[in-house]
Length: 88
Image 1: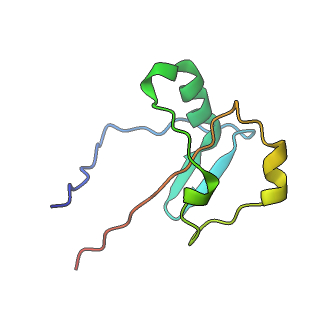
Image 2: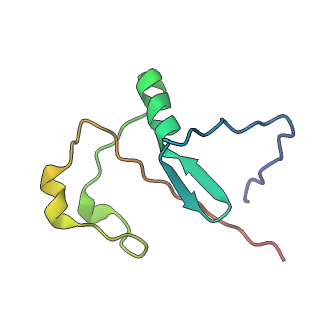
Image 3: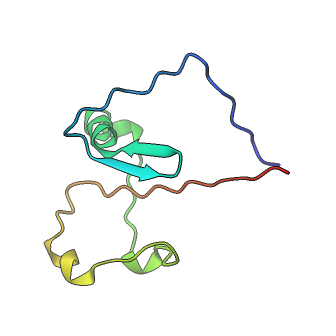
């Protein structure tokens, strides 16, 4: 059984600054800057996992493999999965 989301009428999204990195995805605007700040400020609340690049689902993702050698792996990489469920 799928757990349904409930609307929180008291929810207020965090304000975005013009310099924030945003990732728009459909109706969602993920604030990458704020997520990274949260991880930095709350390191014990986020389980970090090492994931082999070959294990990432390639259907929606392309990886610039030559760029991989220059990536700073001390900074977390964020992978976000958004599932949409259509109810008819």
